[in-house]
Image 1 (cartoon, rainbow, N blue to C red):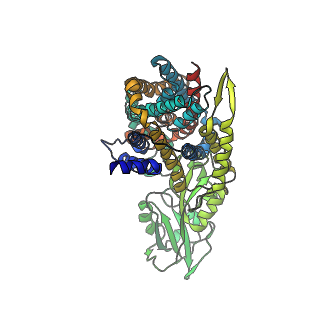
Image 2: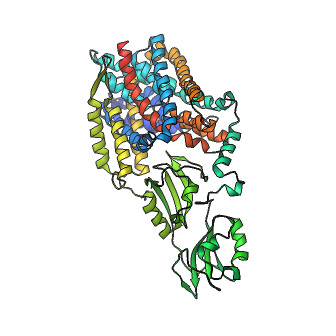
Image 3: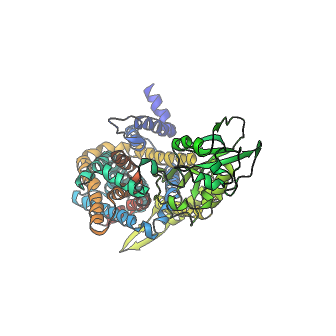
Length: 567
């Protein structure tokens, strides 16, 4: 019976692949004291176990296609931030990311030479210690292009990549989180205090009630209430004048006179007996309304105001680079409330001096007319859709594959990005181009998650199944030394980046720590910093280095293989 099951699995490899995926995702959900292996590491471990079955054959095309989809989506996602970081205001963060990346490369090569690691082990060491799974694919692509090696040797090197990655990934994550937990103490700062000071500077130094920016003051819900104009002080006064009487951001959403709705304009004057529909997220403003305007009325049945919640991608050059407070002075901001800002899928603090960057996603709420007007001003509406532009995905992968085939000789070393690196570059280009022409190339977030996560973990499952038969032997010969090397490689690049920033840059320590987590490609550490700081301010230093690190560290996989092969 057992032999029959094994035979079925060997003849239908997809059973083992999807078993590795399902079991890996399931195991990855378990947490111990807040830590979990995560899906990718769990899928690899399960695949390595299943790969012990003799005779498992994994289609090479499947591995190539799944990795290509993953790297294209990575490039497509970070492309706008990557090219945006090349501007003057992002150069400081780029330097930190590059210093961390170069320190990682040099350290990995030195450790590989010192311990006598193979090119595959050294590349896997970097991929795991710096939690950059994409480097596995570029390393394997480089291995397949190494001249003069037998198929068996190439298979052994690919196994080394997977084993080294599996050994070092766990400490790369746990050790990275622990390191960023200790760094504020090493730097001699109280992260919570520093974050609070930074918030005060970004909010103009007011009290907690004044930290909501003038443009978009949004808490959890927007209150709409109706009031009859009976205060003589507001008779014949304009709507904008009355809005300015309130202590915080308040908007008159509609005016009704003699049961008829008037066309709302900021210069519309209010008369005795008019019904004003007032919106504000501030309870303080609503309590002040009866004194400023008149008695509250039952809003039910008065009028139906159609509201809208919309996520808008910032593309307008006149918007990007401006603070929220600066945008608050624009007439187009009237009637709009900001619910959320996300950058690289991370929530950005909403404070008056927060700078809006290109490709930030603003979640706006207000009257439909106001929101639609804002979309035209700000950029492109990320409207809900189920349609993925597969033309862009297909053309992007084709172009990336062609780029990956190019070979450049540097100091006598043939360097090739391989399919993975080439498709990553293609994704960067296509992602950036979409910011110029947002009507094309839409890939909904749900589709992107499927392509990116399924692509990566299907590739990892293929790697694990292919390496499983040699995994135990490789683990016995290099396991301890790879782990020690992984610990060293997890620590040194971050310290190098910290030292460089301290010596040559003047960055706020909160932004500096955020930038180091991005440079390390470790979102989990960013979340740890946010918990310590009790603030989302570290996110403001994270996005640009994260985009750069995703590109450079991925390319390092190919470079390490080629250099170690020549050493």
